Amino acid sequence: MDDIPDSNSPDNDFSHLNADLLHTILELVSDGIWDWNANTGFVYRNPGWYEMLGYPRHSLENSVFTWENVIHPQDYPHVMTLFDDYISRRTPHYQTEYRCRKKDGSYLWIEDRGYVIARNHDGSVARMVGAHRDIHLRKSSVEQLERRNQSLEALVAERTRELSRVNQQLQLQLDENRSLAEREALTLVANRYRLEKVLLEECERAQRFRLPLALIAMDIDDFKPINDRHGHGIGDQTLVHVAQCLESCMREGDLLARWGGDEFMVVLPESSLETAKALAENICRAIKANPQPGDVRVTLSLGVAERQVDESPAALMARADQALYRAKAAGKDGVSA
Image (cartoon, rainbow, N blue to C red; front, side, top):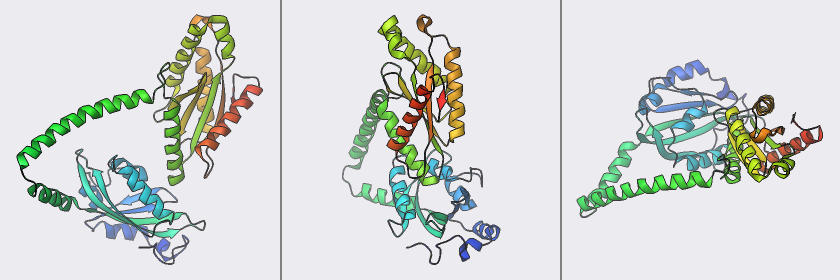
């Protein structure tokens, strides 16, 4: 189903609905109804939505992040693809089935349908409504029917349990291997692969929900002379010490990564340019306040950039790198934006 007709701007009839009246009506509906005001970020969810997932009424944050956080990790990429295609008008409707995490930690199969009822003048979504419907019984019934049609059910169940145990072991090994593959061997912070992966995800998220995103590029001033005078052993110790100091400055959700050589980068989700500059200044002070191995004096030059609308990860990194060069040209040991 297409967007509701005559909804190309927020001043159509739907945008004049009395929100309090609408939400009062929705309090009586048993299905999980949601109402997203994309211009403010506020998401209303009726009591049926909370009861379906076992949460007290209106106990969660009224934002899109609540929805993101309850989607099963395996279903999340597919759901976001369908959602993006619909709000960007690449597909005529939004309807999908996926698992949502309940308050007790279990997962419930739901059907999610949504409709854009108002758009801004630039075509972006202004308001969207939809419903979550419990389809767990139907899903469970199908699974039970499939099991009945199998011969030697007891044997299959035992084999399934065995496979589950093996899969858990393999998953643990996979998680460990993934962690090692995404960490830099010397400093143990995220490596270049992890940085590029996370930056792409955060750029897509910032674009989808109109959130700020900042990036800090930095390197150690005059690092080559440190290696030349004190040897590579002290140089490596310096890199490790700098990485540890940088990690102590990070906030929850920030990603510190070693880009290469003596250069590091920090991805700052939901952060403005001013926030990133303040963190960069704090990093400068922390580095100078911490004694380095072998009495080496270490300072950093830092470049800060905030993501622009429709900007790619590569373009954002290039602007942060340019800001870093400006900090170098300005005399080092400082921050440039």
